[in-house]
Image (tube, rainbow, N blue to C red):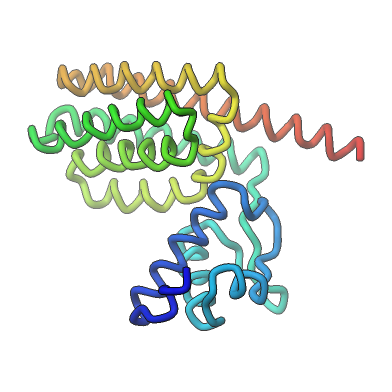
Length: 227
């Protein structure tokens, strides 16, 4: 991390935002936790200016709440927020898949397939961080192949709210295996350019993610109530 200090301002800000985003998504900063600027500056080896710029970026993405006179907090979604957001996300994912099946170029298909096989390797290694990174890249690739900039802008905005929850939903072995099998079927539908099948797989996939996330949220609420 020492070399980060010598980077140009815009590059430094981007790198800090990327690292902070990873910390939020992977739960190194818990939902609802306050972002301690002093500790984060020490951990990331940066000054407060690039850190604050990065926090503003993540606030715009929906990963951080900026509260007047209180500071920055990692977003914590209620059960209603989660249900509503997943409902919208399922529609966006389904539409992305249907359009991508029609519009993806051969090069785009090859890239998505390559990411899929890399993700399978990460799954075999039980490397959740790499798996999630590749998983997110596949979903973004399908969305990009739909070639609808309005859809992409909306997708990115809504998906930002769910990144940390989608990461956590694969931490159970059985549910992770199911998600991997669903991705196999998605790639098969995309290869066949079967838009209806790909839409159905993506909507079902998001429904399963939603169910896992809500189950985890309720389990945590029971544990916290007992403390």
